[in-house]
Amino acid sequence: MDSGQFTAGPSSDDTAERDFDVIIAGCGPTGAMLAAELRLHGVRVLVVEKETEPASFVRIVGLHMRSIELMAMRGLLDGLLRHGRRRPVGGLFAAIAGPAPEGLDSEYAYLLGIPQPVVVRLLEEHAVALGARVRHGGAVTGFEQDDEGVTVELADGERLRSRYLVGCDGGRSTVRKLLGVGFPGEPSRNETLMGEMQVSAPPEEIAARVAAVRETQHRFWLRPFGAGVYSVVVPAAGVGDRAHPPTLEDFRQQLRAVAGTDFGVHSPRWLSRFGDATRLAGRYRVGRVLLAGDAAHIHPPTGGQGLNLGVQDAFNLGWKLAAQVRGWAPDTLLDSYEAERRPVAEEVLDNTRAQMELLSTEPGPQAVRRLLTELMGIDEVNRRLIEKITAIGVRYDFGEGHELLGRRLRDIDVEQGRLYGLLHRGRGLLLDRTGRLTVGGWADRVEHLADPTAALDAPCVLLRPDGHVAWVGDDQRVLDDHLSRWFGRPAD
Image 1: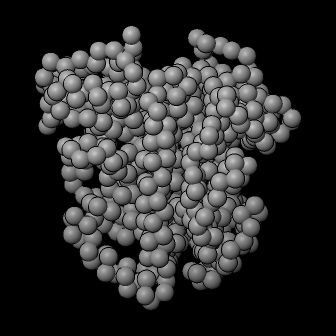
Image 2: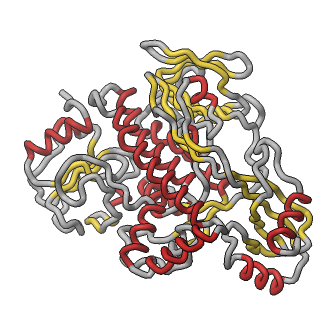
Image 3: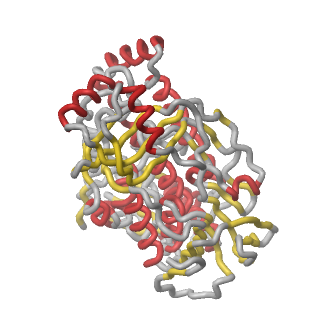
């Protein structure tokens, strides 16, 4: 795509390019998902991405159960499945081998391995098809906010106006730095080299050597892609400058140091490095500027949670920010984004810290790893750790009540097919097994499905647009209170 070029899909509220409701800095998975969620509610969105071309390397990422559920809720899952490979969810925590627990609370109890550029492309195409504008080759370099909105300045000096700005621009977020929000945590102590390259050693020799090394060094692997190409991961000698990618000679040296051989690596496709820095933004919102994804939190890639955490941030924020823009948001709705998502990030940072300790080759961490390996033979322990990694155990604090309250509802059978097929429009949903309730003046924001056959162990549930259960019961008056809490005043 040419530098500075816009791509845009059809829009019923086409406006001048200089006037937007929301500008998003960064068109990675978080930014693209957020743009699409906003467009479902008619919000005028511009996404500004500093890169002019997609990443040159093809890193395989894993979509966890909760993220797969979100894709199903928006009708995107079939497209992703065509490009991915389903894998069991066992062995995700610190690479400790173990079976996938049975009866997990999801209809999508698998890991979807998929190239990250494919995820980004499909989400961007989805956002553009809904009417979002995407500008590649334009970095945000400054902004000023006032009571009415935000004036955003790009690298070429152009100034754009929007009502809100969201930084989805990664761990080195310009938006976060300009906002003056702290990013406390720990710098990288360990670094790992990662790349894809040709390997000339015989496959059986590679497999035997990798198995031997991984008995103690779990930050090491060579995984075949076919045609002699392998994904290579090996601990680095120290902590370097991530702005400068490693060389093939760096890989050879580290492979020899760790495995006693360099396996004849040659002809790299791409080479990269990642560290174990762990940081969390002090705030997710200052006035009309918000942060999401890696701009709000960074952590080691253990368990493959980073992309998933960011996409789930966007799913939580999208409908709330849209409600604020459209004028029907209750007073505290937008603040609930940080209140709900920051504790989730804190837990992810903690579990990745723990996993990094368990990957250490030191005697103490290795002893703890052996103990945890034994404990993971207990189904409840294994299940709890898998629920943490995949985020299906997340429960937002909506107060005391039914066990479903605050949790997302799984994709259950309903009279019209599957529940998630009814959520493509990004609206709330009252699933009513009694047939006696109504959404009344909230019908422009909340769907109503009266279905006594729904596979639900509750009389009625009110679902937010992100699939979380906001209320359980059968009393119209109490329902109206909760509709007001989450969806504002009823229409006249």
